[in-house]
Length: 245
View 1: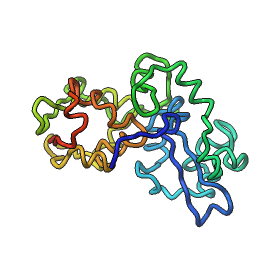
View 2: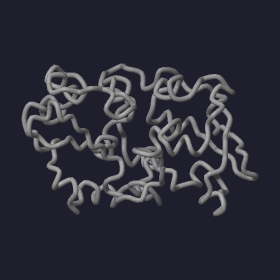
View 3: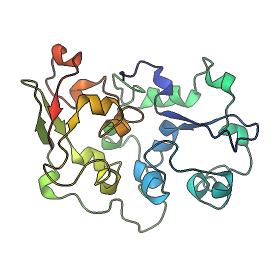
């Protein structure tokens, strides 16, 4: 259980290994950063049925060649085909451990708004300011979300904690720009107003609730004030605080 202290250019990268089917190939390195410039999270995690949990989808080469998962785009038409150029995704262990910096990272950080944590890019601001225009669907006419955001959820929700003066500000609007309602409800958060009761910082740090995304892809918990407005230094270093939703 820890905050993110790794290299900014590697935040959001997933290393996927399947020793039974690798057949001499290195593990797959998947960059959320490269993909989220072009597509929102819902494209892969709703339309293409990628699980939100690493390793749960069980992707195979046969799946990709049949047009599922990565193969929905990596078909030689939208993006390079999974049938060829294996070394673009399968990276050697030696290269993964090297000091190599992906040139696309330097290109993006030069033009996108900065952040103080994670990969040092403020993705919410990038999409709000129109710096990027990621597609919300691979299919024409497909709704961007499962349902429109109700008026009462236009403003951020506030959840109080057991630490005096510290509260959580949660904006549905920023999340729905990337996600579908069903990404979070009901599997991660119950839909009832007071349904999710055991919701605290420790569980987030262990990859539950907000930690499903905010420990791997979305900005990490290092950036406390983005969720805790007016957060003080005492809370920044503590493990206290429990929110009830």
